[in-house]
Image (cartoon, rainbow, N blue to C red; front, side, top):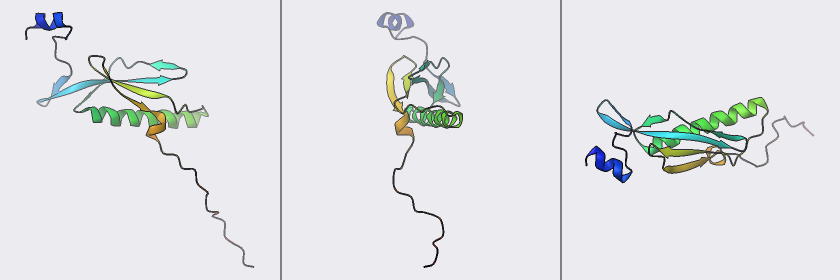
Length: 116
């Protein structure tokens, strides 16, 4: 397909992603969506597979949560990272609540017991 026919069909005629060490890598954009607003990823990341972008999103979410906790800021578990491909198609939403595991169960008292 020539660049002109791709342009008319709405498909970009330039390659999406970049070639690294002989392997074509795809470009993914990880947009942070929170109650306070959104942070649009204007650069994106190059990754071999969509799952690599998911792992990066989970890592980013965990960093954001850790920073919010250290700052004493409430963590919005309904916040998410929207993963888009280079054409702007939504691939996935990774919610903060799915990137961490909280346990709510009784704790064992670690203090030594006094003899009767």
